[in-house]
Length: 347
Image (cartoon, rainbow, N blue to C red; front, side):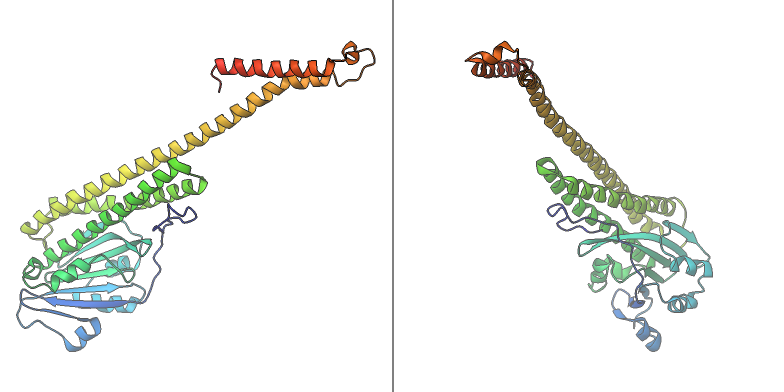
């Protein structure tokens, strides 16, 4: 969805973006409280990197799902079910959670800005005992703060398990929702001022695109509420009770994001109604002026028509002052009608 200066340049819009498949890449982080090692997946499998101090957590982040064989290669050591691999390779799925004996599978929607476009990207997450694997549709995500924490000595992320990494991933995704909503809110405020000032049809189209963007966001965020609710109320065997406390906070943030989305949608609906009402009122004003002008000229046209018939026996035609008298009569009629309209407050 294009954004940026969409409301200042009314020819720009915020269209939805369908993320195209691109090349598949993977990065690997192995870390514990004292050490963190970052490498590509090829280096990880070739050199079999391990942290000097055990135990350690492994985070494999995959960007792109076009290479089916590569995805299967990553999943093979962990005996991931073929149906799960199929879900990873098929985008546009509803957010959900599925539990298996030795792992849990999550489907989420990651929303973020890439320059002036809103990216709606499916993220698949596999949670194992000491491993977290994330599969994104394209290169780009909202995990920069997590990478920074991994490189920071003494970060709580470095000293906790894979379930805490899952919490950080979910928290980063929800924070991404708020970042997008904040930017959309700024654009909506700018659009409101333009709409009330000198809005035209292009401004209305931009507002419709904003509303469409918010609809997509609502459809992406709402199912995640169910996922977090299940995590908090059911015993997901790979998530420790102390981590569930943090996930409850994410659950509350999701509700805030949903409320904000619905508020913006209602605001846009009100603005669009206000715009249509202003256009209708403006048209009514124009029609009223034209009607008044037409009404004034009806008797004047009648008088001009009568004395334009050129009958031979019209006594007024032979009057020396007939022409100026007719003008006086026409002016008096026009002024009288204007005074009448004014007293009736028709203009």
